[in-house]
Image (cartoon, rainbow, N blue to C red; front, side):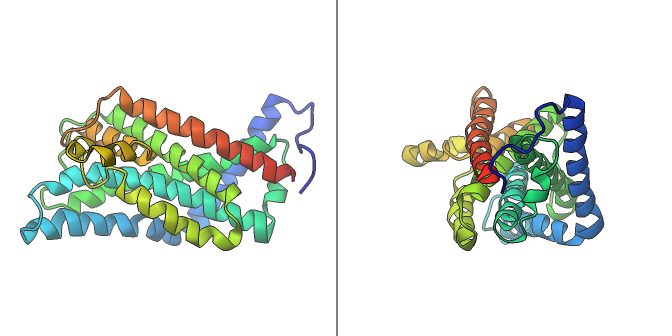
Length: 270
């Protein structure tokens, strides 16, 4: 890696913008042209099974309440947006820094190092957003009652999923710049499992009142705010106070984004 920033001091904002969009367009083209099957399998296999088993099979055999799938759907959308974004930043970044060194080519673009990190987040977030919303037509087929979206606030739902995907990308940037390549599989296991089960994916946050300590612990998880925000936007079940949802999502983006971009810049100029 170079020991100085790679951006020419006099690079015009227009040049930087075009360079940013060119890198982003290339990454999106690679996704669409070369790896659509692998991407869709990675993004949708687990959420589809969550919807099928918990939303259809368990209610049908009497092991869950009818209509549970409609309560589950917002949480699964939130989980998909965050985990797809997280994985699509963290794993490629670890590989590019440690093995392929592809990151060096990106750092030669007329962009500050932090902007290359932002592009990673944006690209992964677009994947996460797409994956989350693709679940809607799938859920219409899988869930026994179909979709119940008559009272949905679409603007709020889109905003929540976008925010969740960006937050997931920021967490992935932290992982990709902090975790050594030979430890990334362990890191995924250690981080994704608690993320999944403490993120209000399978239950409304307010239902944890009788487990106050666990309810407090879940507030440390960005997924909690995205799940509750999606639940509030779709209008299925109880949810936390609406003022807390954007505060939690924005706070997660600021905290993890700052740590991730500082770590990315440090690795880039090391």
